[in-house]
Amino acid sequence: MKKLLDGIHRLLTWLMAATVAILIVPVTLQIISRYTALIPSWIWTEELSRFLFIWMIMLGAMIGVREGSHFVVDVLPDLPPRANAFLQIVTNFLVLVFALVFVWWGIAFVRFGWDQTSELAELPMAFIFMAWPVAGVIWVLFLGEAFVASFRVLAGKADR
Image (cartoon, rainbow, N blue to C red; front, side):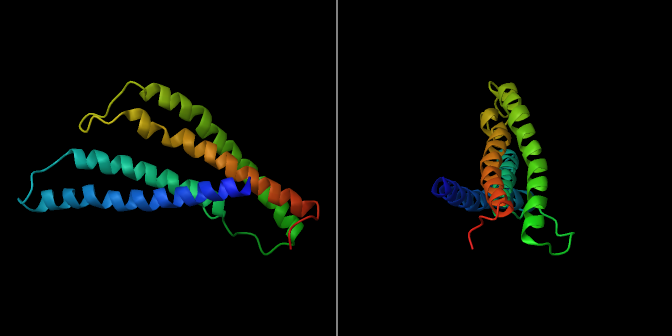
């Protein structure tokens, strides 16, 4: 299972890099068209950049959950390993609730946009709306891995 999750994490990282790289094109076209007369003002670039930005945020959030960096705030002092594991379980449970909300309402969101297309670029809205339930499912997978690691620490079976 760890190899599968490592593969998903690697894929998400590459998709994130690709999304950022592709996002540069429509944003650059927007800037050039707004401040010069070299190319026509294309409104579809604004729509495409917004959609890429949504996916970029969701991909970053998925990666952040796996790396334990997105929803973590260092407020408490350094704790012993078991106390830290218990705290991780509590915080990951709260993130899990949030992830399940994304899955449940994200599916409804995709159904809502299933037959819709974007106004200017005529992109299927379901592909954009899928970012929410996909993020929720990936969060659940990564949180499952984190729960197993924390429970191993609580049981005194952590890899040293």
